[in-house]
Image (cartoon, rainbow, N blue to C red):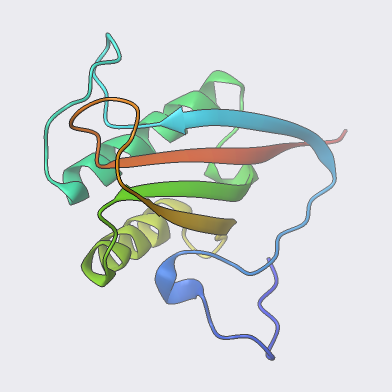
Length: 129
């Protein structure tokens, strides 16, 4: 991960400015706080972020990868505000540690299903060799 000195420090927000890695790209579809049937699980924003990140980890594990292989995240937040950014940043740091991926956060009016407050997709890299 690279955070040039000419840019602000993004780590408190849970991302890096640039990430590079050689290997095969793996795309993980949007993950959200869902039950075993795909129905949204009710909860506040923090609860939904945590379960969404758990679902992301499960999707990664399903293809033999982990958070350390993720190079980019796309986050979608219903009714985005600074309090939600703080919650998300803390959760991402907890799940990704010091190896933060690049990220774009989009504030949205709604997501695919009623009750969804957060969704996250990812690009990971399967190492060569």
